[in-house]
Image: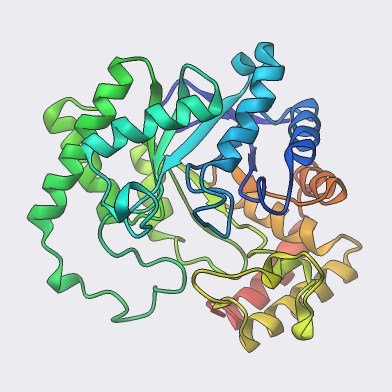
Length: 350
């Protein structure tokens, strides 16, 4: 397993991060235990969760994933020092999470306390803002005029960011979190936090996790360039495009128990004819080079310049094994060349 520094932090993380959002709905405690044990045995030391999980989110499953991880840690206390544990505070919008309120300094302190109890640990290594208070160009909202930036009150946003940083500072000084990061944010968001941190001597953001895959490359090159030069770790989530890139949803297929059979908060916006065509082309490349579609997609993500650690997820052990193995076999120049031809044909299929 390869390990890299997490941005400007002192943390060394595996190039693979184990995502956990299915635990508590599609997967139970025993499933999660098996995944955690296996991943750690393969050298994966980076675990990502969130207070909002399991996914799709609901009042019934809120916090369940953290509870499951906490149970595993409680049964294996010696393993805590060998993992980098990341969690996230939810942004606004859910009535059952702090009455749908925005992220604030006070809410950060409250949320960290609750996550620590569920996780049964004294500290969280990386604490992230799940999405910003302002509208974010994610989940299919990245097309021109989907966001009305001229109507955003930048002064108010900066005041909110400063308040959030002060709440994070409180938790860092109390030893409850070690480092802070972002999720589903933009270059402007990154740079405002960096500026405020420097001006007010507050914790610096060390990472950002955004959606990134062969079907969704909008962060290249501008946001990733920003991350590289500001020493911000870039952590792609959904590198298989919620499973689309495995081919299991081609031609309208809906395997029993798969994610597309569950309620989707934003709908199946990734499921388009262009996505279908792109996936078919990538699967054909995988066949020609005798590798699996998952291997193709994950190894491609891993080799993108500026990527720090890729967040993977699985509902079965064979899936997890295949996904981890994908990082052991880099793609050849020939495969990457074939991929680039398809990328240019389908640069933004959803």
